[in-house]
Every structure is written in structure tokens, then in C-alpha cells.
Image (cartoon, rainbow, N blue to C red; front, side):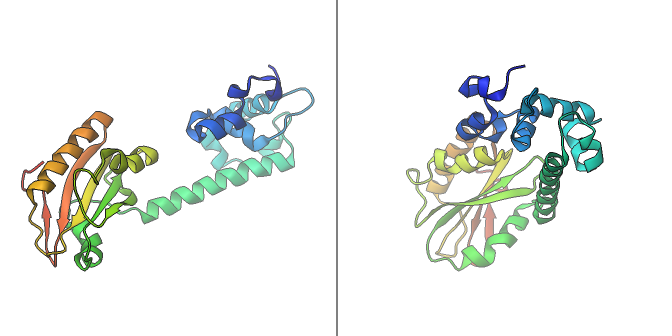
Length: 226
């Protein structure tokens, strides 16, 4: 197998990461980036392949591997073994932190409880999206616009860009009525239908649109307006 420097630029792990992002890399390429330099005889890609082959359950086995196990792989020294295990430990800690911080959404009241204090007192109209995974857990929150909600401002590209970037399976729209009355307007209904249609094309479901008033909220889904 050729050394990494001998590969076309578009096939080198570092260039792929810079140009296309981490999701474009295979497990082998990700490990090769961590390994860095290969040996005189083998490229970092070859060493990464050996590491994966030595792991019973592939990449996941790195979470429980010991430095001694990795050092047994030909071409892997102490420094590289520690670097790989450090990356695995960081990934595990991030995953644990994300899981503990995630809020499960079971009903519109759960969303209203999250935003009633913040949006109920807001003097400007704001549009927020909650990004959800397949288990209806919140994996992100994005303020789309502040100062007014209209079909021109609530551009589907702006609404769905964070969801696409984070890999969300669905979203919930949240916005407030500074008047205090959470009843949907005709404009709210029109915008919501437009965003639902855009989400369907992207494969990202708009689960609900919650409108926050003063001490009250309205679910457009419950009102069968979407």
C-alpha cells in the first residue's frame, strides 16, 4: 500500500478532513490521523488497519483497550497507543456529558416549561428550533431569528441548516407572542405549513410548533393546524 504522501491529495485523510469534514472519513482514516506518521515500511493507514483488526469489536473496543494491547500491534509504540486511548476517552466523556444533559420531550408542556420564563417576558418575537434525536431527546437549540416572524424571515434554509448539521431526526418550532396571547395567527399557520413541507423534503419532521404567551402556551399540532 502506498504511503499517505503518495496518495492523490483528495484521498489523504488530512485533506479530506479539511475539505469535507470528519464525517467523510472512514474509521481507518480517523485513526490514521491520530497515529500521524507511519513507520519506514508502513503508512499510518496500514497501522490504523492493524489496530482495527486487533480490536475484537472494531473502533468500540478502544474504549476498553489497554496501552499494552495496542503496543502489541506492529508499528504502534507507547506514545501512539496513549494518543489513541486519550482520543477514545475524550469521546466517551463527551458522550456521557451529552447523555446526561439531554432533555426528553414527551408533550408540548415539556417544551413550554423550558421556555415560558425566557420567552414569556420577551418583548420581541423570537423563533427557536429544538433539535431532536430518534428518542425525542434534545440535542441542540438554535435561535433562528429575533424581532419578528414572517415567511421571508423564517427561511427554511436557516431553520433546517442547524438540524442538518447536527444530524437531527426532527425539530420542534418554538416562538412567542409578546402580546401574551398564544393563539396562532394566520401567518403562523402559513409559515408552519411551509416549514413542514420543507422538512418533509429533507427527511426532518417538524413535530410541533409551540407558541408561548404570558403564562400560557399553544400547541399547533394539538389544534390540528399542521
